[in-house]
Picture 1 (cartoon, rainbow, N blue to C red):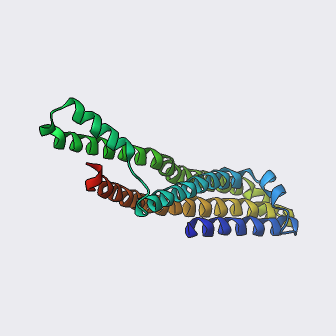
Picture 2: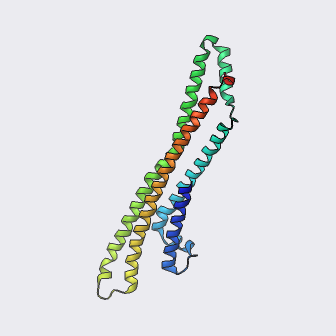
Length: 210
């Protein structure tokens, strides 16, 4: 979570720096976002993926808190086991318990994987968007290069090419750091999911569930 906040702050610093360079005011970020589509291409999707990852981390923290506090009764497992014992002889009750536990953990694993997919997509998407912004920025810089190298080039012409290179740099930085942060969030969430499954397994193995 700290990494997500830090990266968001870093991106905000980039936006403020660009705003100061162009407008002379650090408070003109809204107009900067409205006039800089190359930065929006990477920054806005990054914000959405960061928000999603942050919500998933908070959700897992709540789940782990409930499991560690012993406030998860797994009522569904009790009901399934009671129903199974009424239908199948008691000699096979252990098999019923094992089948239910296996089904629960398969379902939990599929749920975890489904929640991870948007983050995995975000890692690749931010990398590609950062590369796209880099290519566009460099293309604009190359396109303006003849005008800058001409004898009648003005300071404004030089500022345009520097701005294009700035776009390429900003989108590259946001894309790389965004994908790196999401990769760390994915690893952290995977570890939390493993801990949650282990705690749930311990709860299901308690004698009062049998």
